[in-house]
Length: 139
Image (tube, rainbow, N blue to C red; front, top):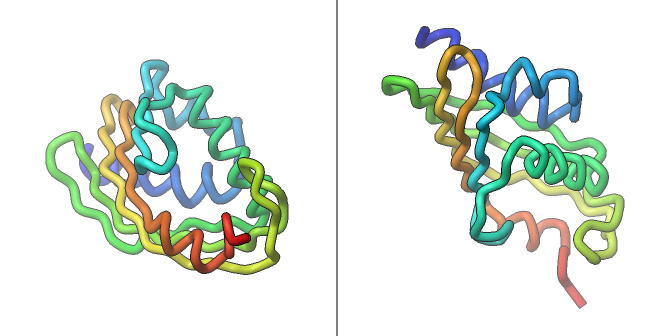
């Protein structure tokens, strides 16, 4: 189970987030899936549909978005992975105008995998670095 859990967790970032392929949702995410993101994305967790909307918004603003899993550790049904996210801000996002600037930021996920599907993701990434590198929110 441990190697399969790592594969499922890696696929979330490198396949689903990097491509936006909605066909992977049922394969990777459990029906009771919950996503907890950085405070900058809001305090409430997202369900599957909310998570898909969030990824779609990021993919629209950063169409060349690519996520890479750098390291993974596993403890029971939890996979911890260190990630790198890259993209170029080329379309409006949350009312912010695109700048055409690229970014590269680190992140960490804690992903709970049950029966080879993701039940929960707790993600943290360098939101400030994203804003500084892309000029998001700059006057």
